[in-house]
Image 1 (cartoon, each protein chain N blue to C red):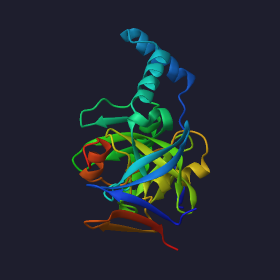
Image 2 (image 1 turned 180 degrees about the horizontal axis):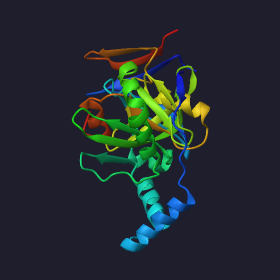
Image 3 (image 1 turned 120 degrees about the horizontal axis):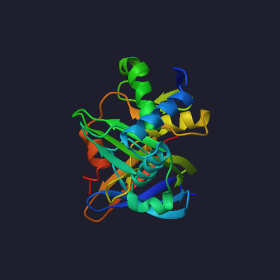
Length: 142
Length: 124
């Protein structure tokens, strides 16, 4: 198991930021924040697997996947691609800790052993081949 | 407890594993897929058995696409006993058993006219 480290500080949304966000939503006539969050959570549970192509709708701020990707892209990508290309990184957005392993399941379990609570996002380091995409989309084999 | 897992081969090799998921235990027939580098991949139809989680696999592809799948944990009856593994939801209809679960195993395919069998044996 390789627990590589802890990165960044947690950046919770302050009360003032939350008020500004709510006010902006009110001005634009959008649904209240809590409704949007509830709707997103509902959609998230409904989609057990989703397909995202370029131009896709971006993930909402505060979404654990979004947080994990922001951490990865801003702080980790270059060093990970230099040292662990082709492996998998598991990221725990709540604590901003992560683990790197050769396989996705190992990376997940290594981090879950350290962080028993909270979402974990597993991400490939580098770019995956089309075979995995076909499997995720149910296009092959069989 | 058997030290080997046996399965059959039609077009593809298949093994049946006893899976203990969050909502029950069931025997599931998996296609052994050496092109899949995870442990298990399961169709959405098995959601009532495996449940849901807040954990996801996010994959970037060389063509710019990105795919996301929910990850759930379960236990499978393996040669040496129960093993805790991860399963990711996929859009397909066939449950897949991938390379990560086959690590440290000897996998034998016998594809004869009379005998068509796959054997999985954990290396000592």
